[in-house]
Amino acid sequence: MDYSTSYTPHADAIAALFTATFTASEGPDEGALIGALARRLIAETPAEDLRVVTAWEDGALLGGIFFTRLIYAGDPRTVFMMAPVAVATAHQGKGIGQRLIAHGLDALRQEGVDIAVTYGDPAFYGRVGFKSVSEADMPAPQPLNQPQGWIAQSLTEAPLTPLSGPARCVAAFDNPALW
Image (cartoon, rainbow, N blue to C red):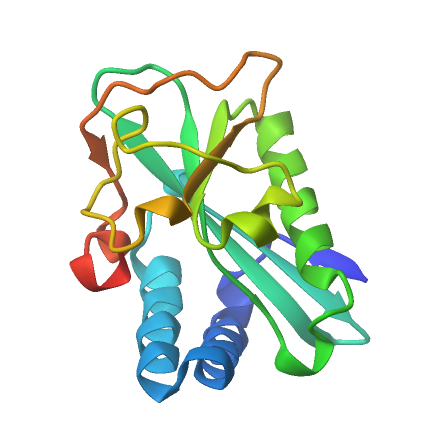
């Protein structure tokens, strides 16, 4: 499996992957929502606020992951949110997602990012180091429909400590339907 951080030339394939994966798991409305989110992230997010990592094998896109900057008004630490994450339906259950996440988090560590957060299944993301956090300790940029899914990890030797908000996300994520 090969990893790539070049996303602009593959924008259509990446958006199609997210649409298909979320349609298969959550239905056509969610597939359309997340596919549109992927397109917006690629088209509208400034490069300094976006990291995209994709996994390929023999020219086929197996999975993709987005990392976008979160800014906490009262905190100097660098924070990126990992979302969304997708692995092609035919390739799920093979550890591709966990390896893709680990690769992306390692790249953020090397870049000097302090904290990664995500909004998802704590049981799945716990396998790659994420732990539950409260909105009081780490404000979300929008009200959370499922607060138990707000999880984070330190990417440095420092322990995960509260962040001073309010939090601001990139424009594509500034939509209550995504939270």
